[in-house]
Image (cartoon, rainbow over all chains, first blue to last red; front, side, top):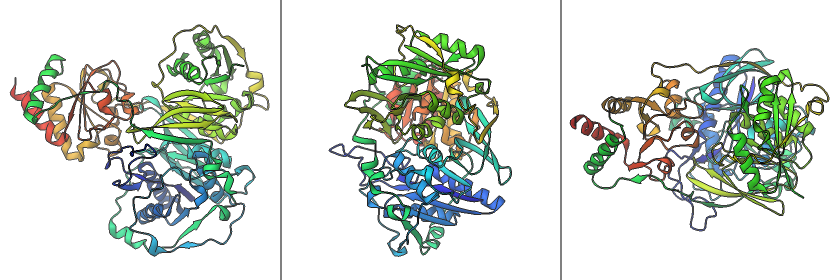
Length: 301
Length: 327
């Protein structure tokens, strides 16, 4: 089975406190640690496990800047066979539809021009890009595209700076079946798969889906393997093809800021409302106060 | 002319989801004079019950009745909606597990803008809809402008808009089945098999009065011991947030949230839980919430009654000792 996994480089919110910058144009990015979006990591692990069971190959793709290459290499170190970076200045400012259309053009290319390779030496070190992640991809006319090359396309169910939209849009552009929030996946044969998708209340909706299809993967579907520094180093010399708008047959106006119908105006700190009464003092004093409060509220039986 | 706004109604067992009334409020935020139309897909008595329940809240109710809609298939419903919606229509859909399945693809098929997961709407100026979204687990908010001149699909976060209970619209129910089924029931590459109900675990946290709930801040499975110790000292049960279940450190039946259990305790201790909206969505009945988290910006502090900014791994054992020593 040929599997494509769409991944994204994002600030790691479990490691970072996110603040708005001084003029409200972006979040404060100077001290952020970036990594692959957590949901995407589950999607890549799932793809690798499927390939190991039924054969085929796993390709990871991202729309991003040069910095995004590091997450492609990381996921290749996990076991993905190929990586692709979709990078072009005209992609900057794309909304969800724009990003989906860029990936759609990679899946079902109208034309593919000569593609430059990004030198592996450029790959590593840089961080703290000023380019806001998630503002990077736009839209094409997927309906007219020729038959694509992947049997299964996976995305993460969401990202911390997104809203779980690219997978569903991509599926609609490619006219392939789609299911979101997938927590179990079983390959029946080369024509269909059986998936469970998470619905309200901890229940699971079981579906049979025809291939080729697009799925968004929810966390918890598997246990993503650990990737060590040594593993990542091994992928440092692998060449990762880079495609831009022209390679993908995308007109520059259809993507990026000009193709976007949804734009961010500003960032601001949410209204904190009443908020919690924060207990102050030494740890002993706080513990003492808290025990009294809990007793008063019936919190200690 | 008043703008026409559509809302897709999620329902179950003949009862409309709470979001049916929240979307009325959201539609009025788009345009106070909007003509608001509910679209309800389903079949038989359950469908009619839902239409009657919401009719007074909407100007019009459009129903689509077909046996194949007894369980909603987002792919089929997408095609039905494309058949009945006007061009440049504005559609609101709840940002729940069904909406996440339906809305992104619907926006492509309608060639409409997609505004996902709105928590507030400021109104429309010259076809520019201004709304508020949250990013990074609710740590920051953004104002979004969305060009709705070509129509829009908007999903609204459940619980973010106060349900509109005015019921002053006296809506008429229209049967749109014939128009929706022109060309037959949509063929999709996706077939419903069954729903597997969540298992009830050894501890039924939906019945607990005191819950000691633990999140990512516990850092390691071995550290769960201090959480169970605190629960024992308080006479409560241990619950958790999603990452703990994803890591397989605790069973799914202990997970609080929209994708887990909905709980109604008297006291809720949130230890090392950042408090995503999905987690908050599982806490009902206005319990006394205590949040202990080392990140002072954690969204959980906004909904908690009392907060302690501390590493739970240091703080919790001291709290347990104090409770045990004060008996």
